[in-house]
Length: 224
Image (cartoon, rainbow, N blue to C red):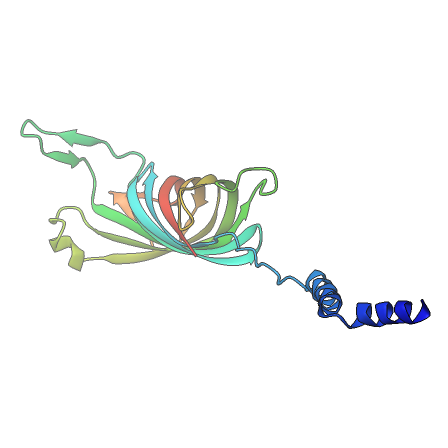
């Protein structure tokens, strides 16, 4: 009887099935302890540059901005704008043939502000990522150009006189993200730009002291 029991025990530990079961247990243990690779989360698109249509109480213009990230809620923004300026007392008159003119106007006036400021995004933790309200503030050195009104538009391009203004701006706006690469932006900005070098006149004997004012900017923001 003892011999039979001994043969049974030896057979049990040497059969291939039992060894395979042990190997399978070891493999299962290794699988359970395997470290899964970390999955990278894609970053939220950031503003890169933009093109804007500008409407002011003085006329129309165009602007372009370049963005540099400071932190998750703030960008450094540099830009340039080109727009027309007129005296607030200008009155456009039409003759019987449909031609327009302004009494006392001696110059066409244009401004080219170069802006540098910050744009801070609000409520980023509570609003949907597609809507991004913001406030902005910055400085704006400005080149002011004028040429004779009594010359044709293209002929007058060779008769520019230059002046210089310096001030700042503040604004509030909203961005709506259409896709991962494009957003639409609407921004209301007020700029104060007093003329500090040379005189600027649109109407005869009336200096323009401040070439700034209220601006509505609507544009497309390209992201990266």
